[in-house]
Length: 168
Image (cartoon, rainbow, N blue to C red):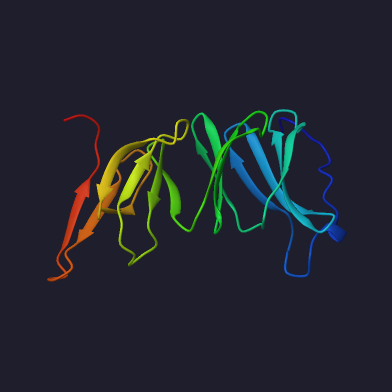
């Protein structure tokens, strides 16, 4: 046990559909999602001391928290917000229904399934597109392995697969 502390989430703060606080561990940060005075919130704690670092109100607890180095990306059905990991200070936000994920440190931004448009990899700090993927969509990724992408031909239904690797 590296640290021991009481995290102030009471049963009264949880609704009838919540079994307990929402938890995620990202490196040296513990992210706790809970209802605070009826509003969804995230509090980030240091794992070595369990000292709170910051708290932010979120639209819902249907949120994914990913490390998009050097930031944390909070994404939900309404969009994504990138924050400075130690402080929670917002760097940028984007509204929209695009699906975001993280691929090898880049944000993966793609239209919803069966919608037209290009998928792309985005620099999490500058929000600039670093690679336009066109109709290629992320199919799978395994830690330590290149991500697998697929492209479906509209007319034939044929599926092309490709690995995204660094370099030429």
